[in-house]
Length: 383
Image (cartoon, rainbow, N blue to C red):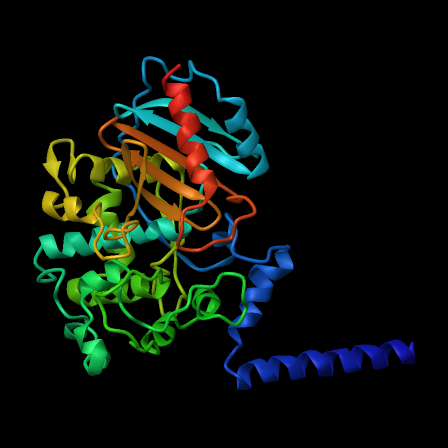
């Protein structure tokens, strides 16, 4: 018994010492990481981790359900689609044709109303909110300096950084995107209770506006600009600008860093479902109009789904761009393979949500699963 007490005593001392070291080295965010992710058996953020964090509710208004297509679920998933859905842990796969649900299926206990983490698909919403703020006169243009809203970025190269640079991932900051390293700034941002402090510590080390470099910090900084410009919390601005006007079926959640600081994780972490995520793709497909009303400026939408920078032909303002054959797709993309894929000429929207995008852990580039989800959808549509 005495021996056991000694072991417990030294274990408590060891744990206490470790916690002290984390605070002294300013890495105490790892305590939350261990509690919310690593002790849950995951090595990175996962689909339902929003339940472990603080969230703000984004309310819906009057629901506008998607109509079912006359050929609703008449086609069956191809063998290849079934295989990749099973292998990669798909939870939702949806094909919308001519603004009607043409095919839908849900897996792993999820259904049409189940919430799951958007991850970086949220970046498209934030860019849209920037467009809305410009449309409403809160921000002058894509070329307005970030320093007009956040004065700490008013010196040297930072003074040249614009809101458009943030939306197009060309800030020139020293942010490094790394999801699986516990000591990266990306991991710190995900778990730190004071996200603003993390982002304000960024340094601009390259000429802004010159090249695309995928960086979640750009979107987070853009969100802080939008809040300063509008005087509104970003989750409220999303509610009034898009979530309610687009007739979302369900309320949703947006993670915040903590209850005390109440800053949304703008680069990620909207918990919603396939059909409600798809609405934002439809808005851009329809040039910013919804039910005949101009929700978002059509010129801004057109700019958003075209390449902005040399060497960044895969990215516009908050949207990924990909050409396959003679088809031009724009898409929302998120960690672990969350996708809203739009082909406007065909009037097709493909949504895939799931646990994994396969063995490929590349960040900021297209992975093979995307082409498969697109190809199999077109095989089904063309049968």
